[in-house]
Image 1 (cartoon, rainbow, N blue to C red):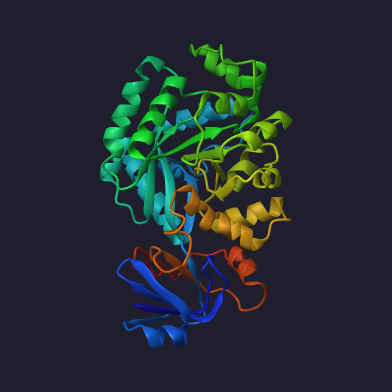
Image 2 (image 1 turned 135 degrees about the horizontal axis):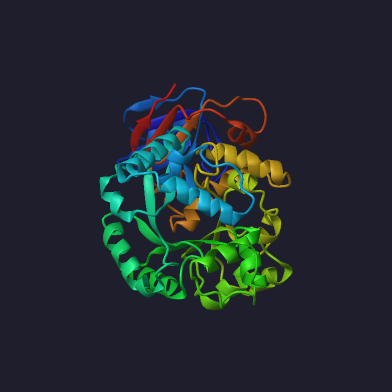
Length: 401
């Protein structure tokens, strides 16, 4: 198959005018100018006209479980109040509600040009009932705050369900809800299976107050039902995490919003990991300004996610890119697009297979009817509709109007 478009944006090189991509099976075989590809290759022609062809987008952090919670919870006085509110809403949902919610989330992500998601699920047992329309890494989100003596059992049972998926990893929820033993067990399994790990860290001011100062609404909330609090009042969440965990490129750290000066010194010396930033969820919670320039300067790979629809309005990564540029105008549109393509692929250990259009890469791509005027990357980021054409794994999946 030969796919022709007005402009190819491969991300692994410069844009190609009147370009084409040759696809064989589920892989990209070649790309270049249309006349060159047509001379070199044979196959059915798909002419996308005056559209721009680019890699499918990668959502590095989402919770499709909670698609059904869109608009259900407003801003709260504290993060502890937010936890109470989302727990109350979750209690109203049945297993079937969650399955419908995940399917709805997948469909919405696909409409917005997302072809790969890193999805955290609190219900790994439901995976077998889910049909994935996009390339998915399933991360079992694990909490043992009420029963830390069951850490190994919680992890091992999750792995039994996760292993039925093609791609999976483990997500100890956060240092305030997952015990050191649960984290250690997740790390053991990730090493054994060469798997990925993700967690929420330094997400809120409440978390900083809890670990650094031994106070605050989340400290009081967790103490009220018996969580041991002897790990609080000593150091920042980042300091504690780096001291107690084995950090490497397997880790995708979500949020990293609340940092102090000493944290940056620690991060400078720490092994490099990946960061999943969720700009619109960050705005919803009114977190401290995200330290994007300093984190990038430290060599950390920053990618973007949507978080859940309990704290967001939709699953559009285009909207996330626009929000990031609103808060960080010094970042270029091209660099922002990298955060949902090449950077996300790197975080998933798929640097040469996803997030780029290059020979040998997976045939995951989208086409957009972007204006010919102005910078190509500015036009891509400004796109605010549903993607009219999508290919995943060499198959055309979406032809929305």
